[in-house]
Image (cartoon, rainbow, N blue to C red; front, side):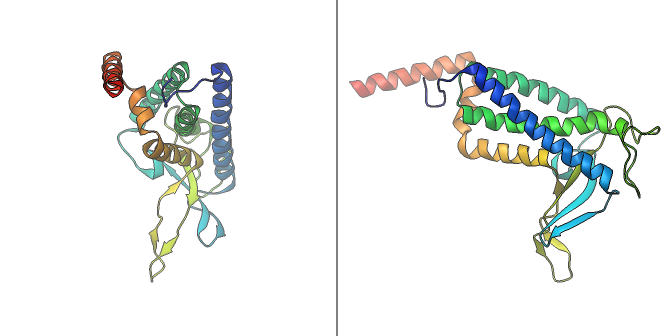
Length: 220
């Protein structure tokens, strides 16, 4: 068993992974529902000087970035989530470290949380312009797969002399946080795990042969 793999009960690992994903998605969606039903678009509450709940919506990626059409982005998110479910299955099947598996699971949970906004919110909410949204209205603000992602976490930490925000300007949500922290952890701590998990069979055999030869040379 290599350093990037460990022995564990795969069924229990899958159950705990699922529970973690459900918890992240539930927290994300509860926050979004609360904001949608409590504040008009562009409003919020000042929690403290450096943290606000500030309701905005975006059609695009994390932190309000936009790229391509809404249908394209939603379709891309669906494909990405399906691919990540299969990837998580392979990680557990091949006994990769649970810390790595759960980090990837956090990234998936965040991606899935924002996907729910895109698929359902356009149809189950009324618009929020100048009013608090209502749930299951007669006239929803959009169509299926064309919902806007709800953001609300705002940290205006550094201000200019005229009161403008110098840092940090993006408004984001709990799902974005799960994705960002997960990606950061993968880059810092799990680069080797990621590389091994993406190896082809040919690459794996070549690496193992190289490691075997190096081990034999050390013994000689």
